[in-house]
Image (tube, rainbow, N blue to C red; front, side):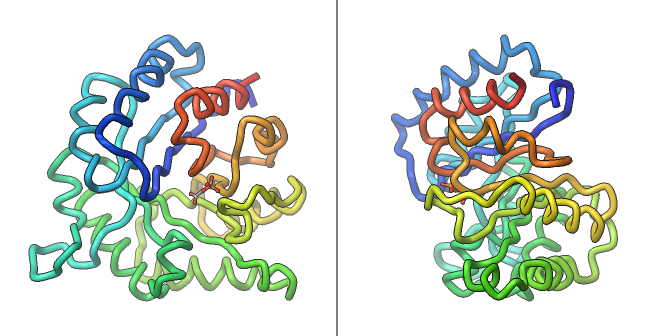
Length: 245
Ligand code: PGA
């Protein structure tokens, strides 16, 4: 585990004000001095209102920035309230989270997510593609079927998958404090890696400073997508440190 290259992605969701940027000082300092910095990639995904200020703040650091969603159209257009992948790229962000279950819940379909992924790839962004089963799926023991469907439809007609990172997030684990056991999680990760050659797979869902000691042992895991705990710089840093200890 110690020398493995790991991703740590902070998903701030709809949280954060301008003064939240102050908390990034700690993370910048940490990332500069961290012994394992060569083996870790830290990515911040703030809400759109903070994207540009965070990019400015993290200029000249090794921390990268991503958006939390984008419109499926790569062009400008009359879509009130939306931003597209080209606009995200234009301000200097490198990543975008797509297919998050919170957006699936509010109506995003696999087909729409597929269009968004294509647009993001065309704009030369890296995609953090979220997939995961609901509790109902899990109880019905159809987790694999769901993951397979989400991957097939989400990545339909996308040949080159080198800019896609999968975030496996069981929906029932997001923001709930409930986490599956490592055996089940390792099986899902293996299943995803079997479906997509050479893909990086991250785990997301209630990652915290305690359960990371266990979650870091998920077999072949390539990092973590961290929601709630990432809003607190100290906790976020602690999670990173504990991953390597
Ligand atoms: P959580 O969120 O860590 O708050 O569960 C994870 C996510 O939704 O990306």
